[in-house]
Picture (cartoon, each protein chain N blue to C red):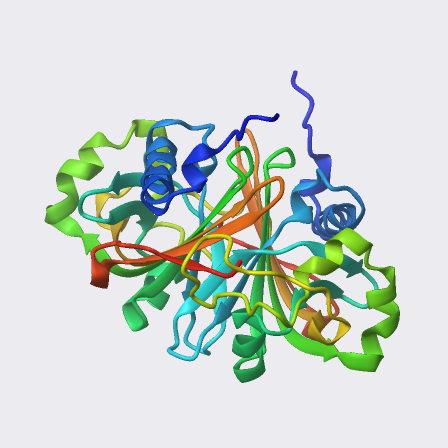
Length: 190
Length: 190
């Protein structure tokens, strides 16, 4: 008899709880898979765009997540035009895919001054007004970044739905959770 | 003096070559990061959707990639309506993010019979006409999958652009490569 390494996948409530356990671990553990999710947005031409981000906050009770970014980045322009986003995590050790649908609010300026104050000095170079991300340059290192609180943005994701897929040894399980029904959960064909 | 572990990141041609080396490795090595990229599409409501896929083919000379999927999956419906997709790879060992923009063709039926013939028997259960992926079911395991060649689809991605970001020890480098200019490459501010 083999022991199921992921007993939480068998019940819909424990599966939902495990999703938030993994997301929260991503905020606090630099080595956790949920530390570096993929954020997908839609650009002005109707094309999807996807990039790695760093998960900075997770609130299971509120169903919200947060990220930091340079407000001059393409993703911010895309989210201003279309605030619907997807956040994707593949947790190989848990055999768990987490697909999140969310609406994103962009927070800048005095409202996030306390967040900026908590950003470690070396990390502040990611938020700059002297070198716009994505601008063409003649040489690879022909740019200088100067930390600027005015360039800092927090993205607040209000989760509307989560699609979870667990790849078990013998069977796969998939469920969808929606804010609209209090995250009750519904099993789906994987 | 420390040796740069990724000398290929310094020149635009070697960076481009490295991208395709990593993608090709994903096709042949189950442990390579490019084995499991994230595919982003746009759904009928204009929302991005992202999910893990398995990279099945990479042709550097043609600039094409391929994936397999169940033709009844949501991603196929989304790609029929909007064939523009993004494919994302984060290769942690290489400190390299690969962001691919592509147009996707959906191939089914007799034209992919030879591909179906090459799919190992146990893997064929992923392509079924008896249980549509995403359909609600009363219990987690209330589904049966029966392999069906008519459910098999190959997605052919014709790459139009690649955005690559290398995170070096001291400096980051970012470049964009486009089919339109023969993949010449352009450095960008990271």
